Image 1: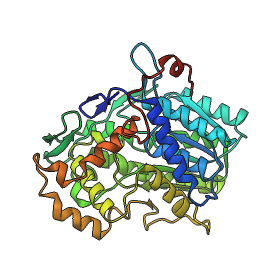
Image 2: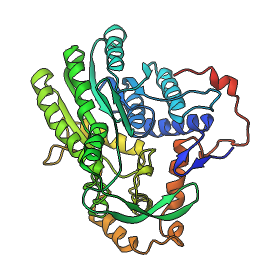
Image 3: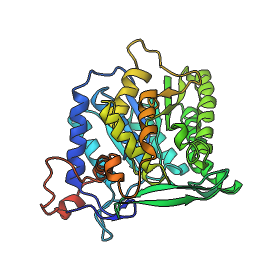
Image 4: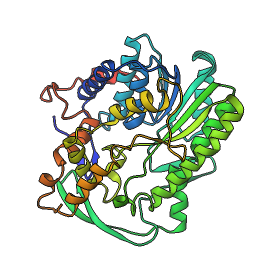
Length: 395
């Protein structure tokens, strides 16, 4: 069985591969020192990327009970279902092997009813209090009772032309990114900014389910000057600015109410289901993989999450480590002078003819395939899947 692609979207997944990959990540975490941190955690966007990695790290290294919220699809006549559906199942199994709780809500996190269901569960069955909320939603559309918004990935000043990787065709293609109008900028901020994060935190606070000293983090990205036109200064950058401003507002609210804190956590550029959509970012990420592997600095989501919780949010002295803007930075290795200097030397030599050799295209593609259960060592992809058995699994 091989991965089926349409552009940069996987049309299928391989559940045994997903299970094996999660087990490999759990094995890595179990080899690291334990983390003394949160014990009751709510993760919004728990089924892939940094949300899933956070859940694994906090369960395996921190002994935390977790609640995960994600919008996924199980097997049906339309297909085998999404990778996130099975990630929820296998993450729950790993936690329960350790005697931990891993509750899954397969629901739209933007909906008021979802917030109500989660709060009711916390009160009834999760001990009544949570001490960490992780906001890791990655979606292009937000629908609420008051309206609906569609995000766009555009620039805000002038058109940008550059190369992007097409995984289906295995080609480097030129792409022009148009300038967003004010309405598109606002819609993108509505979807990807901090408004929903604030709604969640306010309702959790009003319901009295935030423990004394409770923290919250939201994942973000800033990136180097090279990608600033599409990221920092693009529509997504406007949304992230709003997210970071929300972190400051929430920090004051938490300080006043429960003595807690709120942080924007700035991560390294990685292959995720969201990042492969961002125009003209993919050659940079593929080259970043090459340079950081050469320098012995490469991390995937799980390694990043472990470093975040063990060294930044819950270090031995108990004091969160931030920059001058009160942001938690785990993009420090990516933005180091040594890494960026090497990228600058190589970047302009990337062409459609040589990009597979100039960058770590193989590693970039492998990371993407693993998100969907493919390219995982030790998995027999020739063995037929037992659809009936998979249909019996529930997150």
